[in-house]
Image (cartoon, rainbow, N blue to C red; front, side):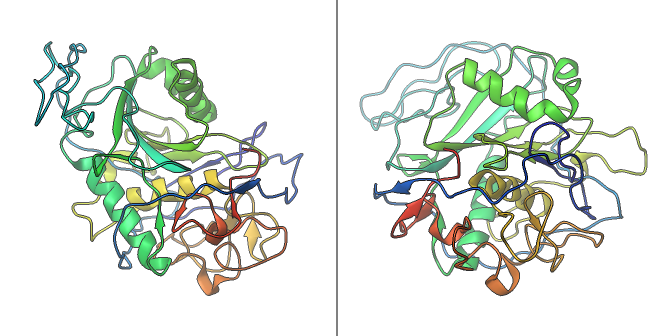
Length: 354
């Protein structure tokens, strides 16, 4: 992982995650966000500890699936009255039909009605204009990945859950195609995440109370994942780059690891997108005892927020609970107090700068 030279963020590589380096002209603890008083329900289950894969030193995080044909976007189906609506017409990836609940059956291209209010994580399948559509939003691949990392996280938090955006009890996954080619977006280099967030913001797809977890089905020349890290870089998009490749042939492509095969077996990529979501919340704060640049800890390679010279093998949320979850360090952002959790903590805090 490397710190961006001009803005704060973090990029992810397979196996050994070196501590982020680079210019950090605004290093500081930063205050927590404002108190959140809204209450809400949640989704998820009781987790079990999974183990992330590790690889050779200097690799890259990766995942992917078999390529599929792409098509032009079809029209959306009509809203149903009871039961499933009709399937959207058109060639390729048309919009899904409606349902009696107001939730889309099939592919959703908008943010569907929320089951609960409050701060939550909304999931997106994003492609460049010429990207290969593998249907990861409709074939269960992304839903299984999210179920795997959220179940693991719930187990680590004693049954508490990260609040996911759902509609009719089902994970709300939005499909979005950026009006730029894969090569144009890849040319953004370390600013790919910023380009994705800008495109989504321009399209009106960024909600003020949501982290947008993006499974990007395109190439990246710099990393397999990236996220903001407030207060230095405030943002809403946490990105996973499924097709990333690197000039150095010794670094495996991002597609070298698959998404989770089931909800009980989170893998490298599933831990990676969760890692970026936690960055977006403001984890790890600079005031944590084991903080290393930028937004990581150094005390154990089993920590999901680890960065260092050892192979990353995530299996623990905050080793010894002394840095960012239940650490209770005055003035420090703490995941245990996050507004993104269910049940909502007393005096819940939104990410710094939100």
